[in-house]
Length: 101
Image (cartoon, rainbow, N blue to C red):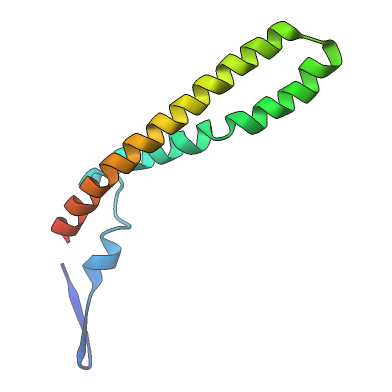
């Protein structure tokens, strides 16, 4: 860890720049993947609504409606499960990050 001396204030450069380092170091990759998964699964409801207006209502396609409902419910369940797992694991990653700094 390098330090810069600016007058009487000594600034640790590694403290801030270490967090912007490679994602694979320090166990941040699972956190990144969980966040990306939550955001992608969060798009299920807007896509569901678009598909309802584009496919189901004009054609009265009840089979498509049931498939969209099943997919949207499973995506919402997956997003909530991933969000819960991320909130459970994040404090552990934060403690490990603080120890490494």
